[in-house]
Length: 405
Image 1 (cartoon, rainbow, N blue to C red):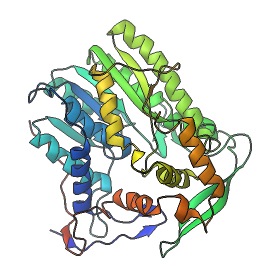
Image 2: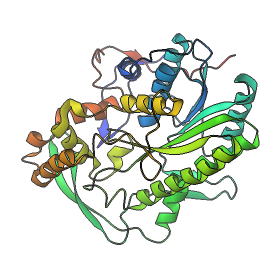
Image 3: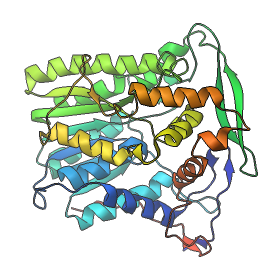
Image 4: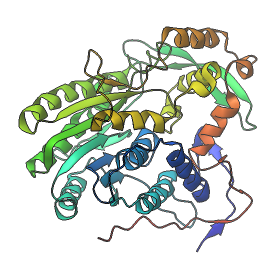
């Protein structure tokens, strides 16, 4: 058993190691923060759900909120790396182990699978488990996948997603930290999409794989009457729309939403079910920190709202309430569930825009909640979690959750 004292080592917002105990405590904190239902299903009696992209960000929040709020059982899929002699496992590996323990303690039968969700091999594995272990019927599917590339199982072609504006270069403010942790506000320019950048990004981050999952499971006769599926999405602020909603990733999100409308019509006809996209509010995630301007925007949003920023697990608890009928299904004119309304009110956006305009290296500490933002980034990897003694050696050899019947 490998025991090490782990300290945060990073390149920008990317950390080289993850802390197992910190990741476990973070998951426990999210679980405790999730509001409990008034009438949770009895052990083994909850709906059968499949969460694709279950180990990080909103997918992790969907898994934890589904377990606690809706009493789900079923399957969770993610793609994580095991520990090696030189490196710890990825943070999602440790978060999954902690989630599995919480599910077991709550009496929820959940199988955690590690592999490529884009592959037909994973789809077959999930379908076999649903048939053999969960009665051959799936009630809910949550799709929360953010990936840099995808290989099409039919053609073998590998597509790569890019974060680029469309039509012309975009120049925006962004937030960086130097090696000593000092903040810097800098302007960065991102060149426009070229060639087939848009098509490649849509192939990875659009709705093609989501629809393939539905087709695969429907073809095996595994969709229960009333089957409901939701893909998690984001729109964001006008301050970031040039690089996000109006950029390559925005075209992919529009494709995801169009796919939802197609699936909704089909599922309504075949199983009396439905498909929706759920638009979530801003959060510090491993995916979002890679987008120019998003780090600055999120820090300023926290500076403006403080504790008014709604944590992902609270947003996903609200999603499960709507999906299960515990709360009315509230859709916008595009048929989307909106969990971001707290962020996009005129008052909030005006306050953030004023801070954005004034933001510079000299003023950023007054305008953004930098302590919170830095800690949130570290917590993605299990560091800066309250209650953890980081001077103590910790075992990095945490096994992936088994799934014996």
